[in-house]
Amino acid sequence: MRSRLVDGGSVLVVPPRPVDVDDQPIAWRVSDAGGRDRDTIIFLHGLGGSRTAWEPQLEDLGDTWRCVAWDMPGYGASAPVDPLSFATITDALVGLLDRLGVDRAHLCGLSFGGQQALHVALAHPDRVDRLVLADTSPAFGLDGTDPEAWKRSRLQALDAGLTPGDIAADVLRSVAGPHFAGPDFAQAVAAFSRIDAAGLRAAVECLPSHDVVAELGSIVAPTLVVVGELDRETPRQYADALVAGIPEATLEVVRGVGHLTPSEAPDRFNAIVRGFLATPDRPRPSTP
Image: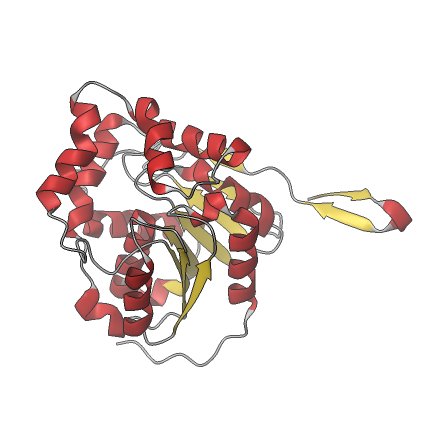
């Protein structure tokens, strides 16, 4: 941890820059200025992201928590798994917790990453402390979207020979709010561009299998659901369904942003997460 003097002689603590750990099979990026003995937050990126998409969170929240952003299997520097499914993703995340020496962690997931967090919380409730679910849903196709049509639309550009980097800017603009621009947008594009085409294909095939609606009542982790006011991909009614189904869930709506709340409004998102994680624990129901 670094510090420097500011006006009046007070000390401003400046967390060190996050660093990459290119381990195998899972690679991650970490900011642990608060020390490895602090509670850990695992950040799970969306379909069009990677570990670097969480840079604003690692840089800000790393003063208090050990912040770890992974590359999911087949993304960035992480090895693929075959088949890619929510079960194999769950196994990979539990393996990362073991690798980090973490018994329990907070999970913070965006979109596809939020879906992954739900599966982990259901399969391994003893490994999850709290959940932050951003711009996500309890099931694919709540609006009647046909899974095969959805997959074709997401894979059309790859089938035409384009790379994730080629389509990153256009895809992100299509799901974000109207004011997403500047360095935060450039950082999101760079995170998307780290995705391998094969990894994106596998994720697109996996995502429509998500459906935990009937199991939401079994989630024992205190849960924060965050949704962008202008999110058209996973709109407010999806967030409401999560809050209605999870016994200990609260909702925050972030005004003026779309589907990428942590990147579009990082300061507001971080403040919401900080407040939620700082709330004292309440007794939790026992798990079988």
